[in-house]
Image 1 (tube, rainbow, N blue to C red):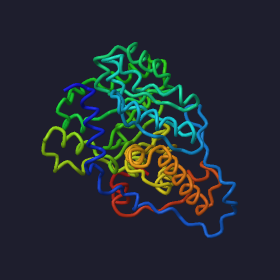
Image 2 (tube, rainbow, N blue to C red):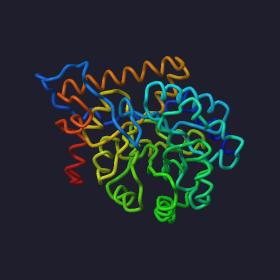
Image 3 (cartoon, one colour):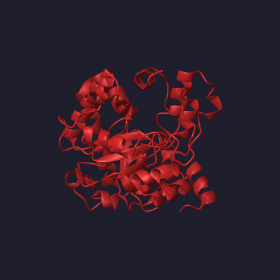
Amino acid sequence: MTTEQRKQDHIRICLEEDVESRKTNFEDVFLIHNSLPDLDFKEIDTSIEFFEKELSMPLMIDAITGGTEEAREINRDLAEVAEKKKIAFALGSQRAMIENPKLKDTYYVRDIAPNTLIIGNIGISQLKKLKIQQIEKALKAVDANVLAVHINPAQEIFQKEGDLDFKSSAADLNKLCHELNYPVIAKEVGTGISREVAVMLKEVGAKAINVAGYGGTNWIVVDGLRSGDNFENFKEWGIPTPISILEAKVGLPIIASGGIRSGLDIAKSLALGADICGMSLPFLRILKSEGKKGVERLVDRLNFELKTAMFLTGSENIEKLKNAKYVLTGKIKDWIDQRKII
């Protein structure tokens, strides 16, 4: 099975199968309502700076795909929207283009997104197989600003071509962070980051953490469907995204992804400690059903909902929102009581 075929399978399964987790636990986060906000809604500022790029709101189109002709069209369409709406854009794993340089065009979007924050991507299991120069060459080829290293042991177990040798992965990441001429984001893929791992990621030199918690696209399910392995007992494995945000607060910028489905989810994530939020599956599905205009409408809706939450918490800008008061209930409260992470 080639990397290219695997990418095609992933797109098909994500579009056709029920691969989303059932619960995000954002329902256990309550922002405190402000009945008397001293604000004009029209003046609320959702802009941020992230990796030296000005964004209109704390949102990125998170890693989806690359390595196939279909992936090329997906990446270019979504990057065009990212440029227009001034949000960040992340590429799928660039392993395919490193293995086959002819696939570079399926990732390259800089020509239509000249000002966009573009995040490259490679898997942590590839670090022991690739030279740092190869990774850097791949980043230069797509004119990326940052590299995300995806950390995905749960997915690899259920992937029929999965690489289960994670020995020395922290040391490999440490070497990369200190020798690569790009900042590195450490990124999970749907099972979350714990406090212990977040501390380790900071120590090895990661410049940001994408918690990618349980709650969104479930890659145990996606690759379990591909492989035919019985994944039933692990469908709910992982740390829910809002909990993982709290777990990952170790002094690095935090990207919240995994089940972000509304501007209110974004607002809650930022109040909990995230700096920016990522979504992938909703963008892919809406692109396929409604085209680029549909994706633009989704970004506009997310922005309106975020501004609404900011207005109703008395937050005139993102920094104020990050200090908004909240109450935690249910599973999140039980978790933090036992883990003592806040």
